[in-house]
Each structure stands twice: as C-alpha cells, then as structure tokens.
Length: 120
Length: 245
Image (cartoon, rainbow over the protein chains, first blue to last red):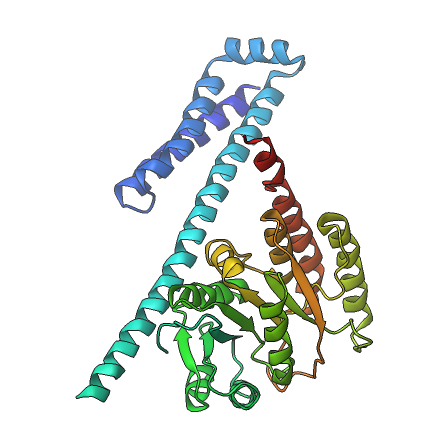
C-alpha cells in the first residue's frame, strides 16, 4: 500500500510541477490550470494522509483503502476531462462564428473595393 | 450582390467543398432556371479551384478561412443573406445532384404557403429515387423518428434541396446544426412551432467530387444525428411558452 501511496504522491508532485511550468511558458492559461492543480493537490493530500484515506474507505464501504485512491483519481480526471470538453466546445463555437464573420466581412470588403473601382 | 429590397427577393445558396468539376455547371444551370436571381457560393476552404470556377460562372463567392463542414458553410450563407435583407433563400448542393429547374417550384411553394421551410423531396408526388440499401434504411428510420417528434410525416428528411423564408432564416442564422444539418434543422424549426412542406423534385447523380459521408462516417452519422435530435427535443420551448402568462 505504501508503495502505491508514494507513487501517487510522486505523480501528483510531477503533475503540479508540469502544470506550473506549462503556465509559466504560457502553454496552458492560468484559468485552465486550476482544475489540473486542484486534482493534483487533492491526490497529494490523500496519498500523504493514510488516516483520511481509511476514513473515506470506511465511509464508502470499501475494504481496501488504495482502491479509494484509484476511484478518486478516476473521478477527478473525469471531471477535468469534462471541463476540457466544455472549454473546447465553447472555443469551437466561437471559432466557427469568427470564421463565418471573417468570410462575410471579407466579402463586403471585396464588394466595396470592386464598386469603388467600377466608379472611378 | 446588393442589399435586397424587394419583398420577394430570393437568393440561391450553394455550399461547396472541392466541387470544381460540378459547381460551374450548377451555377450556370441556376442562372438558366431563374435568371436575375443572385447565386452565392460558400466555398468551405476547398483545396481545388472551386471559388475561381464559381466566380467565372457568375456566382458571388464567400470563402471560409478554414473548413467548417456543411452546416457551418450553410449557416455562413444564411447569415449573409439575412444581413443583406433577402426574404427567401433556396439551398442547392454544389455537386449537381439537385436539378435547378425545380427552384421555381420550391420558390412558389415558399411564397404561397404559410410554411417557413419547403423541402425538395425525392419521395413525394409519385417520385421514386434509387438509393443504396443502407441509405434507404437510414432515411426510413429517421422518417419514423421524425414523425413522432414533428407530429406529421416527412418523406425525405435528408434532402439538402431546401428553401426557407426570412423567419426561418433569422432562426438559422443564429442556430444551425454544424454537421449533417438537414434532419436536425427540422427539429430546430419544430422548437419554434414553424411549419414545413415537401414538394416533389427530381434528383440526379452527382456530377463530380466525393460524398462527405464515407463508410466510417455512415456508422457515425445516425448516432450523431439521433443525439442532435434528442438534444433539440430537450430544448423544446413550447411547454415553457405555454406556461408563461
């Protein structure tokens, strides 16, 4: 069990470092780093607090505490993925509207240019 | 193309993606069928010379900066038509499958009926059309689903030969399905309690290009459309409207 908890703690720290470095290099925007950091910190706390993990296992009726950790890892990353899907959908909608607007404006500009040339 | 001021102003909308073989002929046939009516080709970021061929044939062209798919291209055309004040828009495919000689039939039905949308149908008025078994089964399946949702039969829900009036144009310029839009568009209109009508039309073989529905996509297609229809049913505003004082 200790090995698993140590591994999870190491993974959490690595995730926190990776996200912070990505934010610093502007690969991830601050607002989208929050969900990843939240998930990583939660995992770190749980993997370092065996008593909390055992209480959670007892509350959920799970005999093996590491299973709780795996369950939480799955749930947290599902939530993060859901948030990412939601952000991608919003961005796609905005991108479509922008592309359409750009094409329409380009058309108006071209028409105005041709009209000007025709007149003089 | 100038701002439309006539009360019966019509625009022919042709979404096109890599249709250089057919789009020129389509534009010329439309001009023969309905002279004086402007034709707008929406080039969905083709990698061939679709835009140039369409311009040469006498169409107005808007070019999307990147590929949006059929729904995105059609909606761009609807947005421009709405901005320019057109009262009616008839959409015809750029691959030559829709016979432009039926445009006046659809236009007449749009003007004289109280319907917001008119569909050129392969399967009404004694028409019969040869399609593959898979497509035929798919159409029948969606006809059944749509009959339940719309409360009236629809014979050709996948037809892209569609005319809309300004009320529907306003709705579609704000909300239009992005992929495989024909079936979902019917449910979007149903949400507004709009009406549609089917008129008989003849369809031909495509003159060139490739269908956007590949073998793999034909498996994904019904799942996507069913989900889209279901989501639109959930958005139905009729009950909410009735509850309002």
